[in-house]
Image (tube, rainbow, N blue to C red; front, side):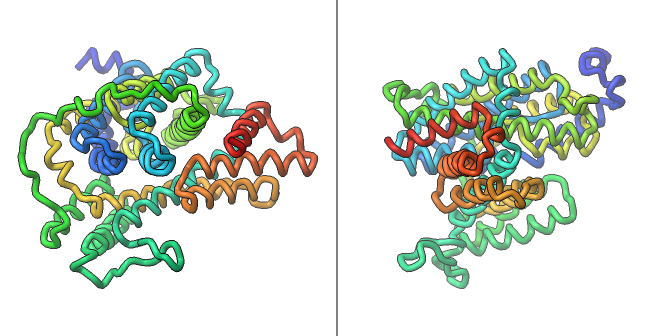
Length: 435
């Protein structure tokens, strides 16, 4: 206990072992839904659901351990929401690539991030991108995730007349999943409003139970406690297309989204915990970014999408978590979760849909920071946000946003607003359009 106190500098941070452990449990409760949601999303790309569960838990464990022992910060990591949707629904189902292609892109992203972090380039890139665009990406991804949740639940369905329409919510026999999802959505919303810890996880679990009498939830065929094998997805890379334009665009999109997701989370949660220094910088930010980079690389090797720092870490910080002991607790809980795979894998898409919808709602928060008075800012922001759900693609939203930003700035003479990095990105996206 004395070693733990000294290693994590608990006294200097005015915290205790008990406070840190409880904070870790709280963080895990708020983000454990990823153990159910990530296998559900990536299985849509044709990946083995059980293997993805194991990869999700292990990658979260490894990345969070690095955060705990190297960065010594109270942040937890896991495969990111939005990034897994881009992996499954855009790269695989939308662009027609294999999930092995997508895993290769994630692996390359992780290696690039390790290099960018080691040479302090990652922070420089982040600072060069317009702030309004950063906020717009978060909002756009939120709408995209919510749309996927509504679709998975059967609340929104396709229509030959209007492309999409409301599903038949009165037909319990044929659309029981929508009824289950709506009930779980209402419950989870109430729990969030009452600030109940682990509201998303509780909503998923209750939705799973509600789904039993409707036949939506199926009991597992086995209660095997050993984690499912990783062999169907372990190290399954596809190297034949690494020099193609599609690979370049996919890797860049993973880089772009993950970069702003992680940095924004680190800054936001650190600010909430009053951990920023006098110049507004996150303590040991290089080590924290390295945990993200290592987690992504290891996660790709194991067989899962990009690993990123979770905004749900704010829940643990709100409970007093201030050091790496909080994230160490989360890592330990991810280890124990490995042996509960039958429980997590029996959770149906209708039960996880409310989590997707509400996480989408949470990601709308940055919209209040966007400047809508300057049309050279607000139009690119709007296109970024609206094109993501309407094209069913995060990358297309970013493409429209960056291109319109540069074009409007050039045509209105506001050349100084365009950074070199943004200009380079616009050229790359223009090439993507032309090819």
